[in-house]
Image (cartoon, rainbow over all chains, first blue to last red):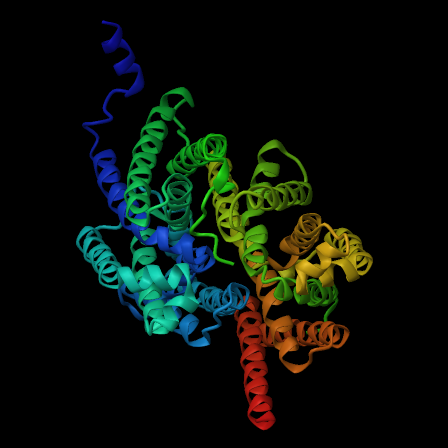
Length: 308
Length: 265
């Protein structure tokens, strides 16, 4: 009785029978898994800016595609792949210089986006594409997006799988990888391509906010909890999927307590990620303290991902 | 182009360019491009929130960009700075989304906060812009030496008793002020381009910081002046011309550097 009562108050009626919710749960989970896998490397390599920038850069491609009558998705992907290539070409290895290269590409793309959007509004009066990408909602998917989304996701993960060992080595220690004759620039370029595909896929379906949130948040949480990369990837994907589902549930339920005008899904999912992020900080701190107490000779935790 | 209604635009853009040239030099030096993108972009949430409770837009922008600066610095103590910045911009944007969902009237103004409305700057916006700009320049000149040292050689700075964490926060606060000043007049996309392109180009031409700052201000001024003039003549959005000119300046700077290096060998 008690269980039934709490169950029905937890899931507002219609949650599981609603078609948009079902789609949101599946699409969100897909995006979260791909973002989690790619995101672990994004965080290890310190390329969160590139990950976020690509979600904005794609907007320029999307609005250009509208202008020439191509599909938003193709423009989005094409721009991101080119942008990833340019970032790699500018190719400055130090994180500071790399962020600058990202910034230059982002600035130029945003300028183009301003131009294309302006032309779009003149020719067809739709700013829909950008606003959708900026604040895209998981509940309103563009039609026919599912198959390209799955294809992009698989391509991105496959690329990471192929590059896995050299990518990991060159991410943790560039010098060591270079010394072992890993083609570090090729691997870095391949990784940026995987990132571009993953971000295109997630930004166009769930919006730029959630794209970055799911790329960086779960991966950062996972790397606080796990030391082995394989485990971190699994944790990141799981945390991402759960955050998506719990956030979607909260957003759905909120329509009841907020009087019909529910909270946006993006806000709810980001809030869940933040709660878990802070909780993971507490857990890792407690663990550090305990390890210090038990193994006094080690002098603190080993932090394999702290690469200067 | 110099009609009376355009005077405000010229003045506002000139003020913004001077500040962006100075602060942008340190942004590039510190590799703080992500923060320079995140604070202006995320601060729109403050504007949306201010609209919701009927407060002044500038106050909302100021509160949110300062809170964002504090959050980047705070999270940055226990995480890498790019992760801290990503989490901050995501939270700010999500809050903005939440605020927007509480009202149905705000949407058109977002476009102007993103892409700017420099051609429609009112005289009443000019005064706060000028005041905050003066504060930014003053702050940078007071902090000049420790800021420079902690940007170029953090270890040496620490050894000389400069708290680099405090300098991180101080710089982010200046960036937050620039945001508050610039977003209402030129928009978040434009201020970001100005903070990155001209200073990055300037650094290619000289190694001496004062000269680089001067060049950076000059490039920023030329960029916005060209952008306003061409935008006025062609009726195309000003953001495009600022983005294009900034990227062009950077490419020229890079070409110059590699030519110098080739000559050096």
